[in-house]
Image (cartoon, rainbow, N blue to C red; front, side):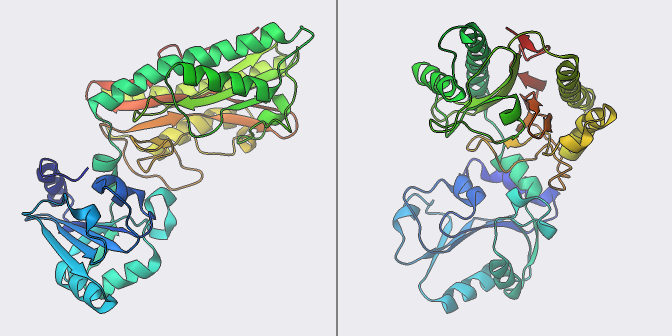
Length: 392
């Protein structure tokens, strides 16, 4: 969040990056980085810019009829007002003309989570005389980082989610041979009830899916369309939750209702070993103080699944950013498949690690844990992450 006490380290980072400033832009919530950095009270419906210079005070360019959200803007910082587009463009030219600035822009849309500024706005800023580069490093270092309190909230949520995920699979197994076996939707509803009872919140889901349905990575059961969970099924439970205003914990647990086939066990081992290869690379680099990029971690996991013969069935990235505000955040992702993620995993960022194998119409398996780069090293949650298929 942009405040007086956060300004000096931000300006030091601009200096290290060789930038004159960082230009935040938003219109109708298009740019979550801008809204998250500013945390303005109330809604804005007109375009605004905030320029954070390498030296000096920030400048806000705001619409004349929307001054309410800017009441807490520090008096010693500059606030300009416009009504017409002519004045807006004039203020912009005066503020950023001749400067090298960062914006939420990703060349070639390499990382869509960074590509938040419309092409027309980039043209406007360039016409104002600015040279625009990506704010990727700044987003990782100042928007996506967890505070100590946020890390603690994540660890608490991770413990609770781990217990609920494992209990859900055991519950399905205990009911599989009864006259009233659970459906996917019923088990999903039970998980939501456990979240509520534990003071946790979620935005949607969770995913509860037996083998063929689990082959769709984003399957969600509904009351109208939901399979019964029977003896012999492979069961995937993907669940995510957080404390109020906390950081999400996002996990996937795999179960087998009865002894798994040799083929299913081989798929599980490929997924588990791919996850562990990603964790191993992270541990090696982080403990040695060496840089590691999200794309490299994706490559390490993907190599294992490819070597086991299932490469074509690993159809998504290995992991996504988890930032303090969003489950799928704007920080560095564990990805060299869907996007060209070249950002380093720097101190303070969190992410998921979730390789999967999906055989259409047959079976799907995924193992998901979360990672966090702390000043004290690599944290993997939950601490009791899954080593073997949970056979019930």
